[in-house]
Image 1 (spheres, rainbow, N blue to C red):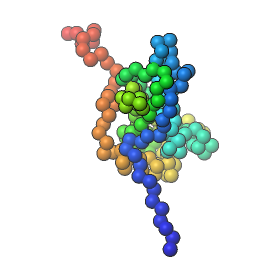
Image 2 (tube, rainbow, N blue to C red):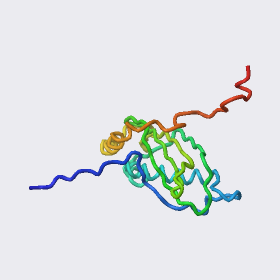
Image 3 (tube, rainbow, N blue to C red):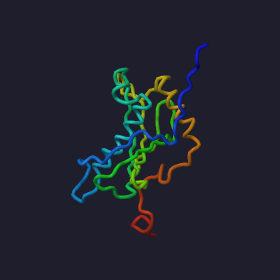
Image 4 (cartoon, helix red, strand yellow):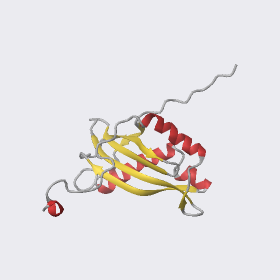
Length: 173
């Protein structure tokens, strides 16, 4: 009798990457600078897309790719050199052509949230440069992630624009 294999449960949120701060990310203030945060958070995004088989190496040779439509970074707490980082990813929403997710970067040693990066990305056919439905096997992977992520609470700060909270010229009457 053949054994049936079960897929491993998908973590909610996903933890796809852990590692040290890259020395190239450190700026003159002796902490991760804005370019470093962009590089670090993009690594988290890249691991998520690789998990979904939508990354450049796997999707591109099949004639598709993922384009970023919107990207929003939020810096929560300073990270200095020699820190270990842990990245989590939460799928916030999706349809057959679009992904909305958040990458959170944590200080692995101290456990605090350091930064987030929220992405809205579209699946695009290279031949037409137009959005198109994801292949069924990729959509099945997204569905599997969604099955565990849809019950997660909405992350603080996700889905917001940029604004000054109080005062400022627009807030004056």
